[in-house]
Length: 113
Image 1 (cartoon, rainbow, N blue to C red):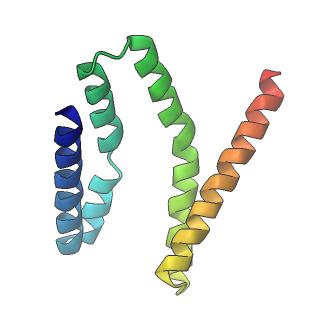
Image 2 (cartoon, rainbow, N blue to C red):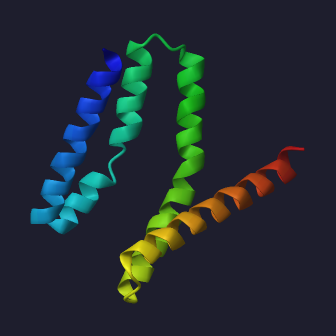
Image 3 (cartoon, rainbow, N blue to C red):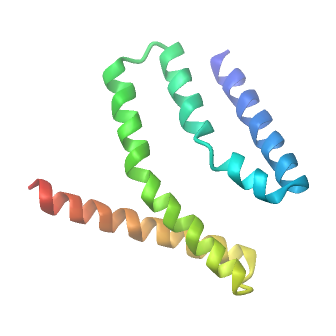
C-alpha cells in the first residue's frame, strides 16, 4: 500500500512541477530545485519505521550527492545555452555528475584514511 501511495504522490508532484514550469519556467525551476524528494523520502522512511540513525545516514547521503547534482545541472545548462542537443546535454550532465562523485569519493578517502 505504501508503495502505491509513494508512486502516486511522486507522480502528482512531478506533474504539478512540470505544469508550473510550462507556464512559468523560472518558478518551475525554483520549485523543482526544492528538496521535495528528500523531504518525502524522510517522511516515508519515518512512516515505515526506519531508525533515526538510518534516516541520519540517508540525509548525509543527500548532502554528499548535492554538489554533484549542482555540477550536473550546471553542465546541462551550459550545454543547452551553447545549442547542444538536449539528449547529449543530459548525457554530458550525467557524465559530469559521475566524474564529480568519483572525484569526491577519491578525495574524501584520501583524507579519511
